[in-house]
Image (cartoon, one colour):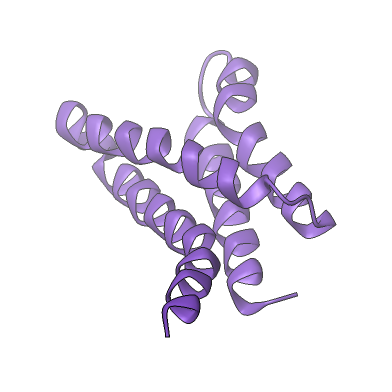
Length: 110
């Protein structure tokens, strides 16, 4: 398992933990957890199991997580710290998912 794969699994797991913490006190936490916490948890497991498309799908969903974090930061200042963590983790997911492809692309050009 490469370092970027480990970083991706760690970022997805941290994102799952963040969502569990964030939505634990909701009146009905289960729908929020199914929408927010389940996808990164399942993608972390899929990445660990070696599913080829997990990194790509993680990067695509990270764009939505990033957008959600920006929206919450601007509209709900009381949750801006959690949203800022979400933004950083989404960027780490995009970076970790994209780095192997970027390395391969530039390796072939030389």
